[in-house]
Image (cartoon, rainbow, N blue to C red; front, side, top):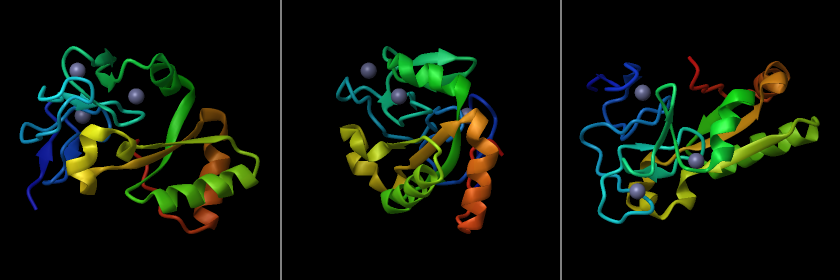
Length: 153
Ligand SMILES: [Zn+2]
Ligand SMILES: [Zn+2]
Ligand SMILES: [Zn+2]
């Protein structure tokens, strides 16, 4: 497998990745299109919800890309990605276990964006918790033996 690095943040990507899971920048070979502007190349995907965005739609804060939902930008400050998967089923299991432990979590799946339809195998699902709950949530996940696939590493 070829190793590429993100043209924006330099993190290592897997050979077949369409975008950097950290900052959201699409790879040069990516054919993802903007969710709002049909036919317009997506320069990235929102680092929270995964919505594909073109140069007109993108909001960049400290080199990390977002859609124009202000909520997603502010979430980056107080929330953290605790779990990344390609399976809604797995994400839901994580969500329910965290909820059971009294930890508020939010799940974002790229599959809710129409523009991702043809790239289904690359769609990721993220589970986020508040920074304050991070340690507790991580220990719950490791008790459940769910592989911690954090994007922060
Ligand atoms: Zn990047
Ligand atoms: Zn978003
Ligand atoms: Zn656009």
